[in-house]
Length: 189
Image 1 (tube, rainbow, N blue to C red):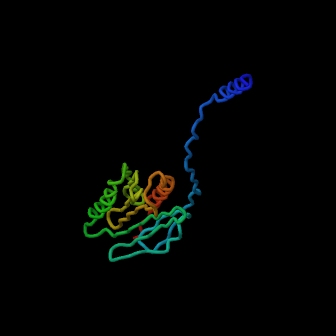
Image 2: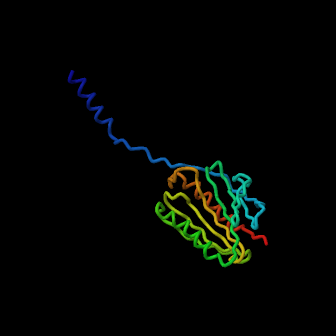
Image 3: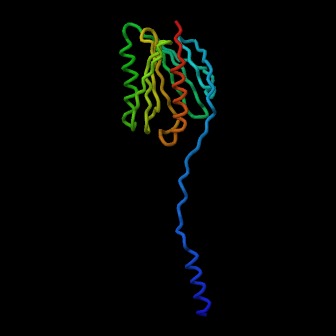
């Protein structure tokens, strides 16, 4: 019996040479279509180019001095909210302060906020893009103005609990669309 058990035990001990290794972490891989931009024609004193992935612009909200456009992305569960206000009676400083304060409200949940200035002298569009990192409600905000007549602000929101790791790929994709909106704004006089 010893002659049979001893060789079997020896084989078992030699066959277990490598330690088990955990599987590598998997990373979420989301691929979005290449962005195709078209001019959005809206009955407001500005125009811009929007991604064809977004729904056609249907609703324009308006109040006494404010008009808004929602650029909806149903496949990404997100919306870029655009708000237009007319600059008059030296209210530019108030409009700038309101736009900056809206971004600063996200500092409670944000890990970081990057300010990226924007200037296009040829089209008289000047502004700021705020990229918000962390679990903030809005990942990107911006404003553009001609400093005389027009002021446009925008915010990106997802219809989901803010979890930066989960929405990061979509947020990065939509930041490009926000930059395109800023770059393509044309004021109508």
